Image (cartoon, rainbow, N blue to C red; front, side, top):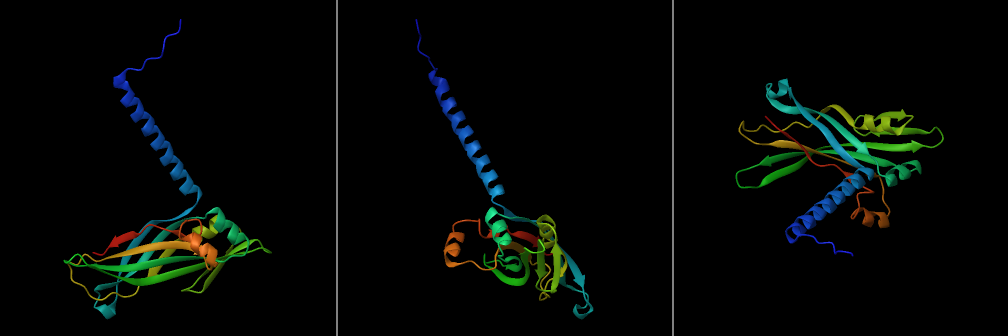
Length: 207
């Protein structure tokens, strides 16, 4: 004689909740792993050091930046690089000036650029930096990305004098993308991070 399987009514809600939670957890883990597999750009360090200059009566109006950036290329960007496409990395600094009326002035402060190419004959990665006209070549991609992600003693433009109680701050955003995208890929880039990678904003309050 077979008996039907009975589930107490008071436990059915708990079971549905548990299954929903498990599904949501699995979905979140899948999303995280997919994003990691698709690459990304991450600013892991932003530090500004004050520079006192005689021309400013030794008041702090100049800062030099120390930045660490982690680059993880998507499959598309890796293949594009190996197929002769030049990639560019940008590091942009912005100066923010909040005020008491909930408005904030934001202006571009500096823009640091790198270009990355792959030389198929020598099997080397060629890296150049725009502001110093420096060039490097590496035998492997990880070493190239590490060099591109280490910014040391980068002098930002001189700031105007400001009040001591101002809550001004500087932010940095890094991006990585092909130096040129054909029209179909430009449209696709608006809907996918496979072609153009952008970091979250890193912030440094000014003392």
